[in-house]
Image (cartoon, rainbow, N blue to C red; front, side, top):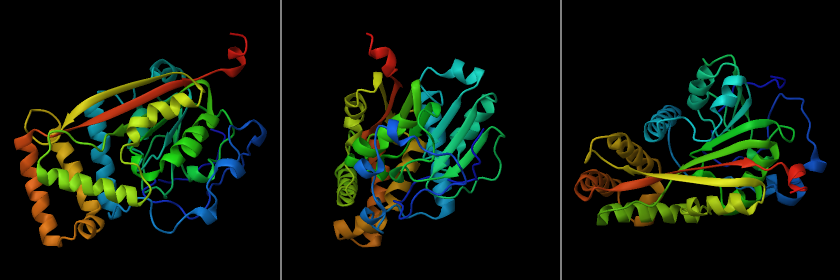
Length: 322
């Protein structure tokens, strides 16, 4: 791989500094979909407060990413849905945006040794061992990524729902990923719905409060319902595919529900402070809510929904003659 990348890691907080990289690669600004002046968040526009205040230690966050990675694999049966497996066997350039500890990169990179994988995250990586075809870079997509236009054949991104406003998704995130995606290449986005079904009063109280905490930070808890539209409205994709699956929360039916429940409890614990403040309850009362939540999901058979969106970028030169 031609870019000298250092080991780095995910985006749990909004950055207050621009991209950091050892790469000497430049940008082709004239042919970019967006320019920094038109669409990218300036350093002065960023607040010191995190976009979404998930309070976890480094080890807790690493464990959460591991659980999410395993859950995603269990849910879908594959690491990706876009039809790129044959490309990966032959050798392509892949980006994992918001890579966290790099578990997806390590798994897929090990399976497809002829392809080159780059993981981008806003924080330095804590991962010490990974395949030779995997590299990490620390960068913030809201300041533009350090890659020339049309750099990647396949771009993968998941679990980034909490970190961008709707304006970010429309004006920065999707357009920037399109910029660095090759014509004909695939973009794939995986997210979980932050609306749950068959819920008890306690569960409704907790999840509604979580929605309000997100809104206070400028995050739309239901942005997942507009990802398809945002991608399609760019006019830059051949066709946007959307697939979803229901995912049980709890052990009420055989399957992966126990892992989903652990993720949900970790999510609530991660925003314990703002939830207690919003609900005006003590830490002790919050703990009782969580215990009741764990009981109620079994009784009510609570479930959530997970989504995948993928699409191939148009070849605009060919489209001119259609």
